[in-house]
Length: 403
Image 1 (cartoon, rainbow, N blue to C red):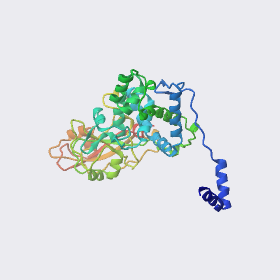
Image 2 (image 1 turned 135 degrees about the vertical axis):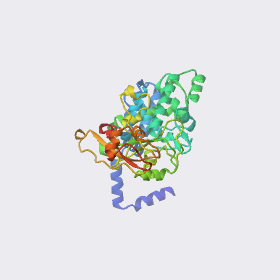
Image 3 (image 1 turned 90 degrees about the vertical axis):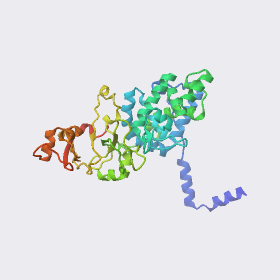
Image 4 (image 1 turned 90 degrees about the horizontal axis):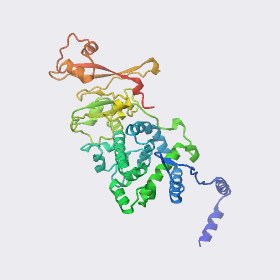
C-alpha cells in the first residue's frame, strides 16, 4: 500500500516540480563543523584529548551552528550588550568570556524559565536576593541587565573561591553551589571535566565554549552579519527619584515618555506604582535623550559605587524631583563631537513652600548665581509654586553611548 502511494505521488509530479527537486538535491548539503585543535575558556584549557569531552564540545558546536535563527539574533543583540557587560566583568576581575553566559542563559533577553529564573542572567528569587538584587512590590532587579550582571559577577567570584576554577564556577552557576558541592564530596573529585554531572550541567560549559568560538569566528561557522545588521550601543541619561511614585504611567507622560518606553528602558519596574525607596538609595531611571533616541546606560552607570575611582569612571546623573511636570527641552545634537564638548539639558523645578534657593542649587549641583541668571531673578528669595529653569551640562564624550 505504501509503495503504491509513493508511486502515485511521484507520478503526479509535473516536470517543473521534478526539476526543482533535482536542483534542490544537487545543491543541498550539510557539513560537520570544525573543532579547533586548541580551545580554552576563561584562560583554562579544554582537554580535547579526552574523547568524551571532545564529543560534548562537538555536539554544542553542531547544535548552536545549525540553530541559525537563535544564533543570529543573539549575535545581533551581543553587539549592543557586550560593550555594556565587558567593563562590569573587568571591574570584578571575572574573565571576559563570561559575557557568553548571558547568551546561553537567555539569548540576551528578559525571559523567565520554567523554574522561574528571570532576566538576562537567570536568577531565581532566593539567589537574586542573596546577591543584592531588590525583589519586592513593584520592583524586580533580576530584569535589570546591569544590576543582575553585577550579581552574576559576585556569584561567580564566590563560586571560584570555593571550587578553585572558572569551569567549576560555571557549573555552580548552572546547578547551584549546594548541588555541585554534594557531587564533589560524593565523587571525591574537584575538576569539572572529571565529574559525572547531570545532563544539563554536563552540556553547560561545552555550550559556553561553543558559543564563544562561534561568536569569535563567525565566518568559520557560516555566519555573515554586517555592522549595520547588528543592534549597536545606544545612549541614555539617568535621573534619580527619592520619593514614591503613585502613578508611574502619568509620571512618564509628564516627562514626555510613554509607560511603554519607561518600562522598556527600566525593565525592573513591574507595576504602575512604586513605593518610597527603601533605605537611603533613590530610584535610578534610565530615559532616552531629549531627541527621542533609544537608550542604554552610559559607561559610568555600569560601575558599582565604591569602585568608580579605581576604574577612573565618574557617574553623572541628574536629580529630578517628582513634582516637576515638564520634560527636559530638546537640545540639538552636535554635528561633530570636536566642535561641541558639552550638551545641555533644561529641566524645570517647581519651588515648594519655604524652599530656599541654596537648597535648589544643591539639589541640582549648580550655583545660586547660575539660578539667578537663568531665571532673571531680582533677588534670591523664592516663593512657593514658583517655577525655575535649571540648565544641566553633561560631557558629550560620556553620553554618546558605550563604544
